[in-house]
Image 1 (cartoon, helix red, strand yellow):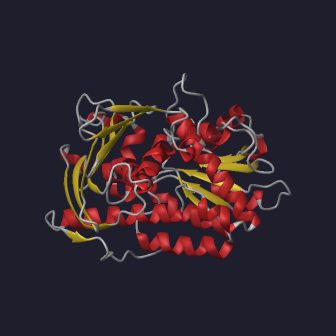
Image 2 (tube, one colour):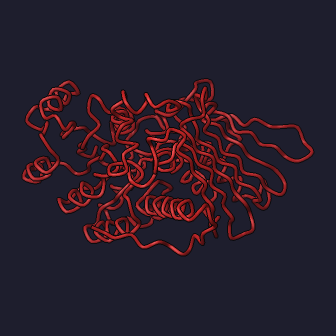
Image 3 (cartoon, helix red, strand yellow):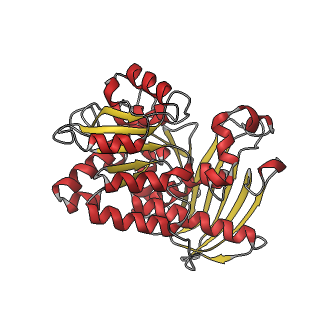
Amino acid sequence: MLNGEKKIARPLRWGMVGGGRLGQVGYKHRIGALRDNTAFTLVAGAFDIDPERGKDFGVNLGVDESRCYENYQTMFAQEAEKEDGLEVVSIATPNGTHYEITKAALEAGLHVICEKPLFFTSAEGEEIKALAEEKGKIVGVTYGFSGNQLLLQMRAMIEQGKIGDIRVVELQYTHGFSSTEDADKFNDAQKWRVDPKIAGPTFVLGDLSTHTYYMSKLIMPDMKIEKLLCDRQSFISSRAPLEDNAFVMMHYENGAVGRLWTSSVNAGCMDGHRIRIVGSKASLEWWDSKPSELRYEVQGEPVQTLIRAMPYLDEQCNADERLGALHMEGLSDAWSNIYLKFAVAIDAKNRGDEETLHSLVYPDIDAGIDGIRWLENCVRSAENGSAWVDFSDQPVGSAK
């Protein structure tokens, strides 16, 4: 169980690029990083494309005015001159800026925590991975939902053979908040998400379902996709070629099949984020709206509801427990869990502790690259008339 005691020798000096007053995700990053005040300390930021607004915001967060910078280039350069300068930076900016900011941060000697999807192409991902290895730095990806500890319970039960051989994987992440064109016109955070120059080659596939895809990999690390088929739609025609709805069929190397539905036009839906894994003996199902419950359905037996934080759960699940079974946890706790693991990974990297890095389960650079490859194959399938494509036959992106 987590209780705020330090996991590393001292808090890491942390900064942000983006995540300002008008952003949708910045607060989630700060909740995650600062929940355990023994892991990170916010000391600097380039919070906004409007420097004055960014400075005002940073000061209101308690950051020294002199360390609220007008842009990330200035921040990286000036922080490098300080004895107490930045050690790690989080990137909470639109997708199209991730590559250049991540590269600049690594070249400035910083560890990086970046929003998803990581970059536009897997070639960019491989280039950044090589640079991170050269610099001896960590690149983490904020798949925030993956910090829900019952996902680790699912992982443990599958490893222990509790559901038998996996046969069917059912994934869904949908909502209805983009059901009308007005969502694109009046919401600044939505506008860039439907602009291919900024968002990249996908909308809901990258914005929503990369979360769910990574969570499925977390739960089933040994399951490899053999081929997939993607059928995507732009029900709001102005969003084309980006999709606001998509279905992805997947065939796995072990013979299992999978289906993913992602949508921002599921009208009336407040939270359609579910994962169901069907095995030869039993099934497991988790739903984001009930994050403290895991359904375990054994064929021929009554349905069991496993509750977060109970002693009958696996130790790798309860290691991330914070509040106890009587008190509900949710997304903010999930973000806190992955940020704490980022801190442990960074500390281990700094100390050359490869054993800890190897055993730690968290969304690292490889997870980010795998998510990009999955998106590349989804786009490739959709653009070829929703044809089946070999997942191992990776398209070649051009690194910048």
